[in-house]
Image 1: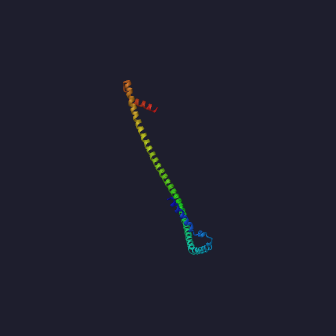
Image 2 (image 1 turned 60 degrees about the horizontal axis):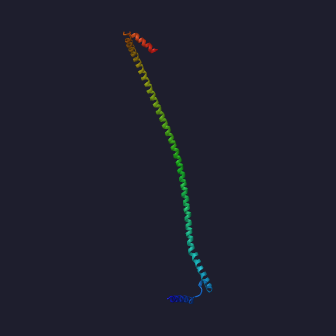
Image 3 (image 1 turned 90 degrees about the horizontal axis):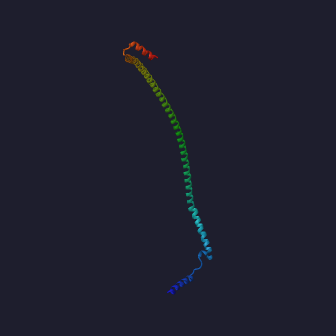
Length: 184
């Protein structure tokens, strides 16, 4: 069986070699002139098709794209200029608002300081009046207390002398002795 199989293999190789057609046509030197003519005709036809149909379309697409890019750049520059102008306007408005806020703050601070000073003066005046009233009350209370002290001192001195001596002293002599001790 191995022989039959080997024979088939050998027979196939023989058949291929016997039925050969020669060299590969593009490499056959006898067909070079016809190949060059057909190549030249094909190249001229391709050149005419590309130059008349494809290149104008590609050129139109390139021109449209260039115009679109230039339009977009012009629009971008316009928007940039507008944004810069808006930024400058914003900055000037912000500076104006800050100066107004500082002026308002200063005015409010001055008003509050003036109101605080006026209130402080009013409170100081009230306090001075209350202190004067308190001094008067203290002076009156002291005078009342001192007048009572003299009477109490006279009564106490009379009681002490009576207890020590057993006899009641004269009221005028005790009063004059108390007055002398209070003055001295």
